[in-house]
View 1 (tube, rainbow, N blue to C red):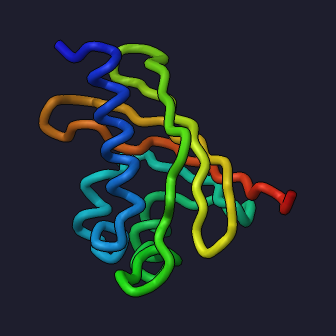
View 2 (view 1 turned 90 degrees about the horizontal axis):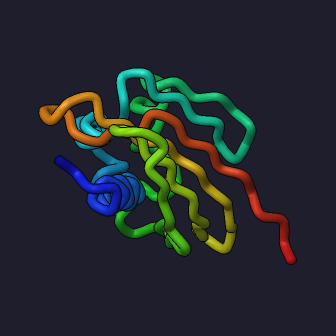
Length: 126
């Protein structure tokens, strides 16, 4: 059985994968990391469902190997319940910062940890 530390580490590893240009550019790879009931509230305030995110991700910022990439800092996590982890952190991409929160859930061993919810809030210039 996973320990709390293992669960948080796995969620962090998968969240970092979702920031990788290689993953973002591939619908098939992104598909493996998003929960069937995935929802996101983006930094723009837009609400995304799973299908909209899978379709848009290859064209979004951070998907081009030669372009700006996400730089996460301060990633921490808490196990909310067995199979449910909440992560918080900040990212910088192309000079813009955002505070982020994601919830990862593990429905079974076969599918592993998948992002269930994500929210990004822009950090105003300081």
